[in-house]
Structures are given as C-alpha cells and as structure tokens.
Length: 75
Image (cartoon, rainbow, N blue to C red; front, side):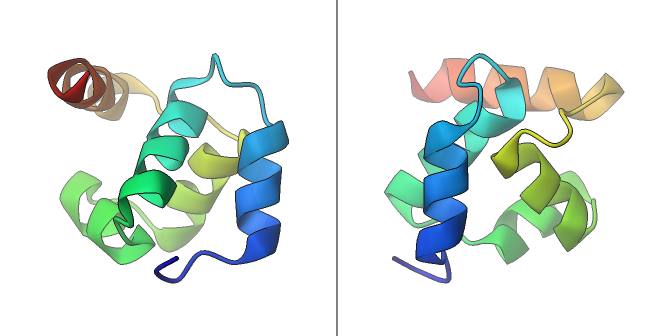
C-alpha cells in the first residue's frame, strides 16, 4: 500500500463504516490514493485527513458535500 501503515488500515477497518470520512478512507486505501492527494484536493491538514479516515472526526460543511458527491460519482 502507498504510504498507509498497517495500523492505519486496521483502525480504518474497525471504525464506523457509516461515517463519510471512514468511507473515503477505505476507498483511498483500496485505490492507493495518498493522504497528500486528499489533503491537497480538499484543502485540509494531514491530521484532518487521518481523523476522517479513522473516524475520530467526520467532514463538515463544504467538505462533507464534496466527499459525498465524490463517493457517489465513483460508486
């Protein structure tokens, strides 16, 4: 996997799969989309991306809508 530790993959796998950020994380891990790419695309910090991927935080506002639309488009 590209830059994803086994620990992050495990935390993502165990996190609440209903959370939008966790869904995004699962997709990015599976498709090997880097945290840097996600960070730059959504204009957020690396920590924010990790929080989304692990279920610590969930996207809000414009990012919530953008991620929802993105995931709908790839489904």
